[in-house]
Image (cartoon, rainbow, N blue to C red; front, side, top):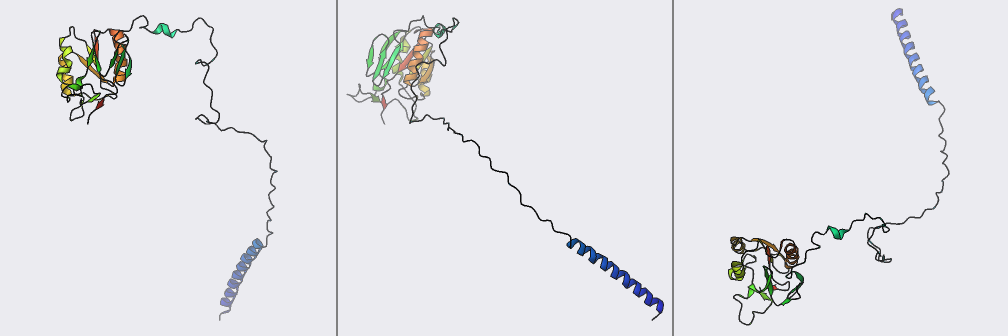
Length: 243
């Protein structure tokens, strides 16, 4: 081998060994560094809070301790001011007397009127300040059941239908009322188009409600507008529909 070639090989091997030594020393230096020992954390002493008492709030009233009825409807102490509102003075109908045909009570078999008259076993037809017994269900009823508190007033479509003969008083009265309030019994029912058309052809508007609300509305409107403008036709709340 050429001497120059041998010298180059030795130099190269020396450089490689020196690099390996340096890298090994660096690795050993890192691994030989002293380990850091983590110290235990010192916990702060637990501070005890003062004991508190809580009360649960419920929206519903407790059965164990029922509240007493209020002694007054006022929300606060009674006011002594002179500017208090007198709600009685706000009633625009306070000086208007209720009509004699106003309905005081609706019973299961009739009505009690303001003029101390009681209708039993029949409905009422209130027109122009007069009271008429009204039983539209007796037409076509079997003999002996005319006074029964049951009958047929609905058609096959479950509509409240009354024959035209039952409205004969409306054909005769003049001037005719502007509004007719119909009470269909314990619950409100839609009236048949033929019944509504017959009444409208007389120039009378129709309002349909159950008997209780119909009586209340008649009392209000008859007091406000007069019995000549408002009429009512109602059957008792105890009347039942035959099946």
